[in-house]
Length: 449
Image (cartoon, rainbow, N blue to C red):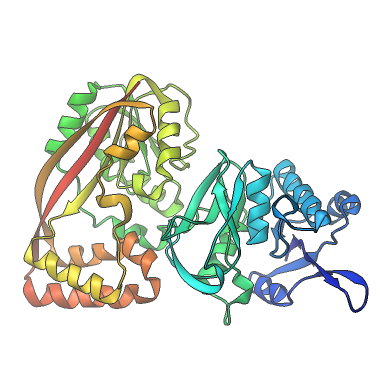
C-alpha cells in the first residue's frame, strides 16, 4: 500500500478560540480506491521536514482551502507548508497533485500569477484541451499567467486554466475537487492512478485503449509527404524526429525515404505497435517523450514532424521544444488527415456526432495552424501543403478505426460505445465489403529562423 501525504486547510473556530487543521474524510475514501493510505500533515512548517524524512511518502496531495496570503488570505502557515511540500516533491522526485487551492500553490511556486474569476463557485462546467468533460468548481481565483515551466492541460470555454502539469517533474494541478463527487468519478480515479502510478502521467491524451484500433487509420497522401520532403530539402541519412509517432503511420513514410528517424511517442501501447511495424527498419529508433519535452538532443534534426499529434500538445511549448532540437534553418511540419465532410457517408457520421455530443468540437486539429506558428516568433514564413487521397478500405476496418478516435472519446467517454454502434449501423446499411473514403492530407511547414 502506498503512503500519500496530504496537506490540510486551516479553519478558525471562534466559538472555541481554536485554529484547527481540517480535512474531509472523503479524501481517505477516495484514495482507498487506489489502495493508498493518506497521512494528513499539520500546518506547522517547522516540523514538516522531519515528518517527511520519517514518513518517506510515495506522493503528496495539496488539498483545497484557504486563499494564498499574497491574494488576501490569512493562513500563512498553510502557504509555508505547501511550499515545503512542493520543494520536497521536486528534490525527491515523487508525484505531487495540487487540488484547487493546492493547484494555486503549485502555480505560485513555479512563477505564475493569479486573478479573480466569476461564476466558478459551487457550480459545474465543461473543460477542454487535454481533458474534455464536466467538472465541479469551487474557486474564486484562477491562474492568470502560468510560469514558463508549467503546461496548461485543460481550460474552460473562456480560457480559465483548470489543470496544469510541470514539464519535467511529476507535479500536477486540477481546480476541481474529486473528493466531492458522489459517487466518485471513474475519470478522476484513473487520473489519480496515473499521477501516483510510478511513471509520468500522460494526462488524459491516453491512447492505450485505442492503440490497436489506431492501426486501422489511413496513411497520409504520398504526394503531400513528397512535397514536404522536397521543401525541407532533406536527403537520405538526414536526422529527422517524428513527435507523437503513434503507430508509425508517418514514421514509416519517413523511414522509407531513407531518413534516420527518431520516433517519439509517450504511450506505451502505441509505441509498441509502432516498433513492431518498423521492426525491420534499422534507420528508425523509438523513444518515450512528449511534444513539450522530447528528450532529444539540441540542434540535431533537419526536420521535426507532428503527424496528427500537434493538437494534443501545448502548441506554443511544442514549438519552443521543436526549435531547440532543430538544426539551424531546420524545418517544422505538422499535419492531419481530414475526412471530406461533404461526402454523403461522412455527413451521416457528422450528424451522429453532433446529435450525441451537443457541443462536439474538433479542437485545433481542423484549424489553420499559421497563426500559432507565427506567434511563436521562432520560424519564418509558413507554407501550406495538401494532397488528396481516396482510401479504399475494408468496411469493417473503417468501422473499427472509429474506435481510435481520441477526439470523440475525450469529449464523451460515456457515449463512445453508443456512438461507435450508431456509426456501425450507418456504414453497414450503406456499404458493401469495401468503402471508399476521401481524405485530404493538410500540412503546415515553417523553417527555423
